[in-house]
Image 1 (cartoon, rainbow, N blue to C red):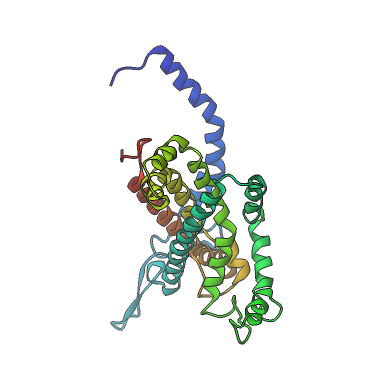
Image 2 (cartoon, rainbow, N blue to C red):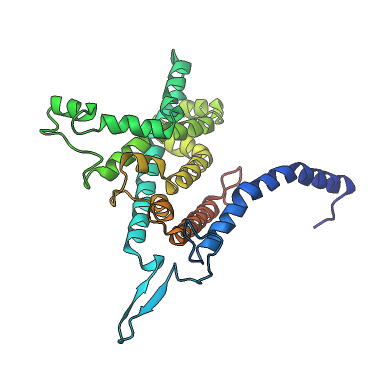
Length: 312
């Protein structure tokens, strides 16, 4: 590797000078709380004993409790069935919601990429669900899905799909589906926006050449549109997967204290504040961070591409 020139070194130093304030703020508001949370996960801290917390090793993660009579049991987060249920709920929510949001976002982006009267108004209207604050969306949908006063039950009963009202957010059979539906409604416009940006980067000359060669619309989408828009779509999927793995607000507002929809973030929050198991909740938060970090790094590595669409 050739040594840098004086100008290149000067530009590098200038870049670090400009980045220094941002890095300092990031370390103050993100790195320090993260390290503090990881530390609390190895202590017996509670909400009233931050200063006197003692180091207990990996007891919050895994511990063998010996009863002294030859019997015992494993305790800790790694053998906690409630934690692994929350992990499964989070993964299932992420896989289903992100997959459907990607499909619906692609369809909406393809429609919005066409030229038709009023396209600008439609593009603005599509973004309304995404612009509404999440808590507001969750409360709005909570009323719409209410078993006695909700408009969803009323509409489905009028057309004969339902014979009796359904408690969408209270029933174990429908609670997760209700949460997914609200999240898909809210964040599909985000996926559509990013995919639309990728579609608009595709030159029109390619489609004109395909039409002159007699290539049909399905084959054009499969051979031209999809490969060229794939990098933008993968970026959208990464962002949405990160957000979905950290899902908290919709679940907490729509289905509080529901084991069927309890996610990793909700589990950590309950132990941190509701049960006063601050160390245990910190351990759960640490595992949540590690799971998200590993999935993110693996996904980015697996889908990393250069501008030509080939793997680096």
